[in-house]
Image (cartoon, rainbow, N blue to C red):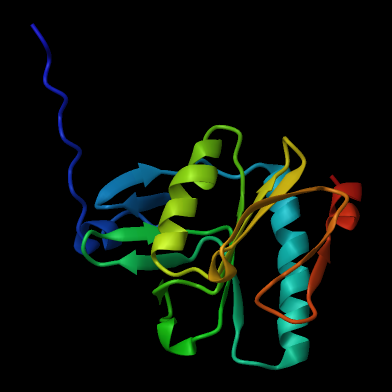
Length: 185
């Protein structure tokens, strides 16, 4: 006798907004997925890259905004898809509300958590490409690799070591030197 596999509850926007404030979760095609708390290494990398990006964007005095997690990004209403990228750049201010970005950011970085690497490499890469993210980086501290996906130009899965200096493709003159970040880990 086979036991039926229960279907996950489909989450609505109202359900998502009713979650307790300290809940770390994302929604993929209406299915709620819990997120683990980040590690010290994760947060160190996040702060270093965030500082570099923020300084660059501020110096350029353009329309773009750098936002670290937790900040919701609603990629789709139907089916509901909400993510919380580790770091993002949004250049269309009309997408930004006080508590959410409505639509795809221009640039996203995810820092791989040891418990769910396939989320970043497979699931999120699919959703980010499908919903129009221009550029998506996966920073993997355990493997000491950075995978760059520049969807806008169909450059996908270009892998760099942690000692590389990598161009942020959505800008003409922005590079991130990961050897400097690797020194503090």
